[in-house]
Structures are given as C-alpha cells and as structure tokens.
Length: 306
Ligand code: GDP
Ligand code: FO1
Image 1 (cartoon, rainbow, N blue to C red):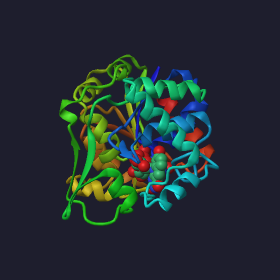
Image 2 (image 1 turned 180 degrees about the vertical axis):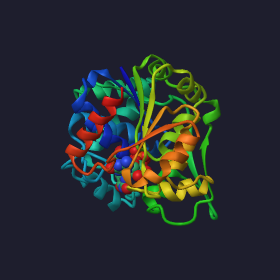
Image 3 (image 1 turned 30 degrees about the horizontal axis):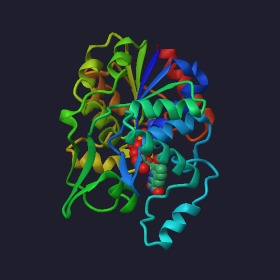
Image 4 (image 1 turned 180 degrees about the horizontal axis):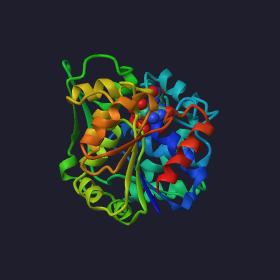
C-alpha cells in the first residue's frame, strides 16, 4: 500500500499518474481539509473533490478543479436572487456538495461521506480526509483575517499576507486510517502541493507528523517549487509570509524531520548539496507535469526509487 499526502490541483496531477501506473486500490490518499468551507449552506471540501473527480476520470484537469463539461446554471440563478457567485459551483458539482451536506447533517463523519461519494463514482483508491475535526486555514492580512477561499478565490490571492494559521487544529485528531496508513505503507509520497496551505495543515494535525517520523516506510516528496517559483498559485507568497525560504531547499527544510528523498527539478541542481546537508537525499528529475505522459513518467521514476 502507498500512502499519499495531497492538496488539490498540484497533487491531483501526480495522483492521476499514480492511479495509472499502480493498482489504484493500493493507494490510500490523505487529503487536506483546511480549505473546506461553507458556501450557500453547503459543506465544500475542494481538495477531496478534486482528488475524487480526478480518480473517477471526470475532473476538469485543465482548470484544476470541478467536473469537466459542467454547467453553471444554478449559480447564475442564485446570482439573480442576490446570492454570492464568486465561488464557481457547477451544476453537477453541486450534487456532491448537497449529498455531503445532507449526510453530515444526518450524523455521518466526513470520512464516511467521502467513502460513499468515492464508491458511487467507482473510485477504487481509498480517499481520507486528514481529520474529521476542525482545522481551518486562515490567512492573516493587514486588513484582518480571512478564510483560505476568500483569499484564494474571492481575492485571487492578491494583497499582502502577514501570516497563515490552522484554526483549531491543535484540538483535532487524525481521521481513522490516516496514521495507520502512514505506519503500514510500503512508501509514503508527499505530493508537490502547497507546503503552507495543503501539506502544512495535514502536518499540523497532532499525530500525523510523528507518524511520518516513526514510519519504517521511505517518505518521498516532490518539490512544488522550481527555480524559486511555484508552478501555479501563491505558494511563494505564503512561504515568504511564514518566514520560509522560497525554494526547493525551503520546502525540504520544512519536511526534513521525516523526509528520506526529495525530488527536485534538474534546474535546481545547485540546491542538492544544501538539501543533503540537512539530512535529506535529493535527486533531480523533470517534475513539471504538463501532459499525461509527464505525470506517468514522473510516477514511474518515483516508483523506481522504491
Ligand atoms: P491546491 O490545493 O489546489 O492549491 O493544490 P496543491 O496544493 O496540491 O497544488 C498547488 C501546488 O502545486 C503549487 O504550489 C504548485 O507549484 C504545485 N504544482 C502545480 N503543478 C505542478 C507541476 O506540474 N509540477 C510540480 N512539481 N508542482 C506543481
Ligand atoms: N478555484 C478557483 O480559483 N475558483 C473557483 O471558482 C473555484 C471553484 C471551486 C468549486 C469547487 C471545488 O471543489 C473547487 C473550486 N475551486 C475554485 C478550487 C479551489 O477551491 C482551490 O483550488 C483549492 O481550495 C486550493 O486548495
């Protein structure tokens, strides 16, 4: 079994490769839920949905979120009533959020709901939320604190960020199966996801980081940063706000206490000796995943290290 830690869009690229190059039923995927929020009364779990739709083969891989060929008629109609439309909920996607919200109201956990949606969409991998408890990513700005989705989607990640926190995470517990997967895996893969807002919240759940340190399985991560820049999104700004060096080295440093191997871009070869000096082996591979071939090739290269 392979345990995989991930956020949404960047992680989904590697997970698509993994699902095609391994037996998908061998994958246990632990998703960030720090981005979860309530919109129009519905519980949205963007990273869980991105991964589920990717594995079900229905994701809009170009956009990186939502369902391909979805329409937005309901959202348009909500706008007519003066409702908020900044978060683009597609008509088909809405069915997922309505189902999740209803099941949570009936008392099911997010783990149980995720399992039901996964199974209904024919996904063979296990998809786990990092936690069934609170642990919401908050972005601190000079004008006050906002939720991650307000920062990322409503404000298009513009504006100064002075800090990032995971509200309530210290009282959260790992969801059932998360620590077990890390302990029992033949390898743990940390996806090239945002280290502050995708992997950071997972590591902040008490018990997960220590499981990563203690597992006998090799822990391998792929850098989301190439030549000091993220491939997409605001990882550079958020890393800087957290006092991290914005580089592959900066990511390696954040994971150094549990990481065995860090896969970086060949262009970042100059970082290799610095990374190895903090006790992490590193290797240069082409880690930009623009095509399905890129995703499959990188996956095969990762699997070869095992
Ligand atoms: P989010 O939850 O939607 O933000 O998704 P993730 O956190 O999983 O993905 C965002 C991160 O993925 C960013 O920091 C990007 O730099 C990284 N990323 C996106 N595409 C690629 C890629 O093709 N290769 C690598 N190495 N990183 C990528
Ligand atoms: N991201 C956007 O940039 N704009 C959107 O309107 C948007 C809608 C959306 C709807 C459902 C969903 O599951 C995800 C959605 N995302 C959207 C993705 C998004 O929330 C982020 O990529 C992640 O939260 C970042 O981790």
